[in-house]
Length: 108
Length: 120
Image 1 (cartoon, rainbow over the protein chains, first blue to last red):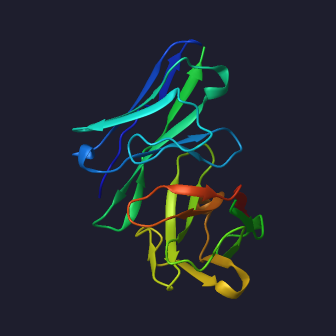
Image 2: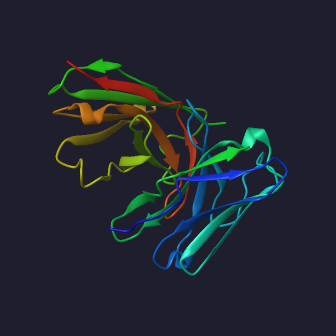
Image 3: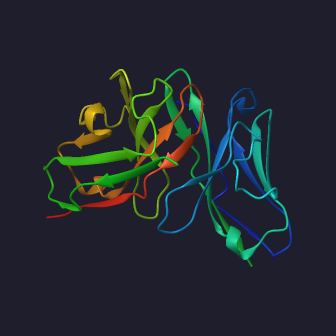
């Protein structure tokens, strides 16, 4: 089965840039979606299809995907960005979604 | 704006059967564009896909749960449901219902989630 690997935690100071990685075999050939989840809340998509941003999501959020690594980049990080971020792809063979283990972003 | 709302018991005993319902409002429930899913999250853990149902009734389940899970839909009530039998403490989790628009798309609408605790 397909596996996505995310670092458990990333820390960044306010105003800096956070880059969250998501590794998978040939992930560059798949569409990657990113979700933000704050404690006690449902996940919210912040980037879909590698780099598209839903309405209401700040331009500070951007995505990229190539080779074996996809990335979510958050520029000018704010305290309100503190959350756990999950990447997700679709496993066409198994016809099911695959989620990464999540990265907890801490704003120092 | 579409809204999803889970409902069902919050506390069950080992070996019992979990039954949850997701009620969908604010959109076309029976559209062939939508796939309706259940995703769960054990305390302090990540997201785990449980399964989905398509408007036609076609389903697919997580292989690790396949022998215990059934997802059904009731288009007349704009609802879809999850049944999970032979519960153990490992099934304690927040259960979310969610929608995606097919293919390799993302989950664009989620319910708020409901905590199910399995304990004697």
